[in-house]
Amino acid sequence: MADLDVLRRAIAILEEKKARGLVVIDLSEVSIPTEHFVVVGTDNPVHAKALVNALRVGLPVKPLHSEGLEERRWIVLDYGEFVVHILEGEAREFYDIESLWADYTIDPEELQN
Image 1 (cartoon, rainbow, N blue to C red):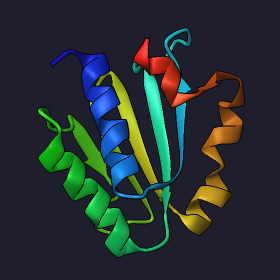
Image 2: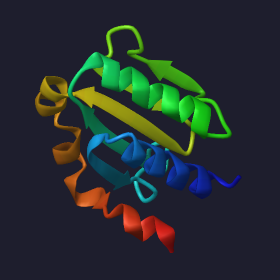
Image 3: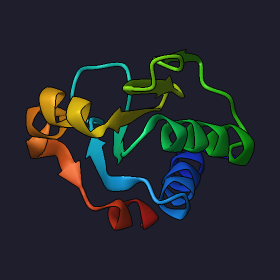
Image 4: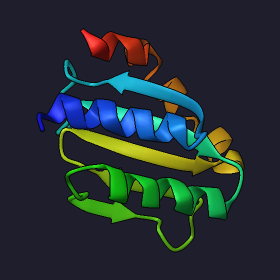
């Protein structure tokens, strides 16, 4: 499965599992070692764990690196070409990743082309 297909599948899984406020940030034109960020919110640690488990089961690849799995306030799953950020409500508001990369936010539908 190509990297873009894996990204599309990850987005579909997160939407199916009711991740809140899904945002895709296209970093392909920026000098950092990943192509996209996928940022989602969650209301509680149980939901965060469910999102992680759904990605583990539903994707054909495993993350190269992960952080925050114990605390579940800000979970980072690094798949190389894209990174998934799963943030609990207060952490998402505090770190406000979307504002930092506002110029690069895209509609997930753009990835279908």
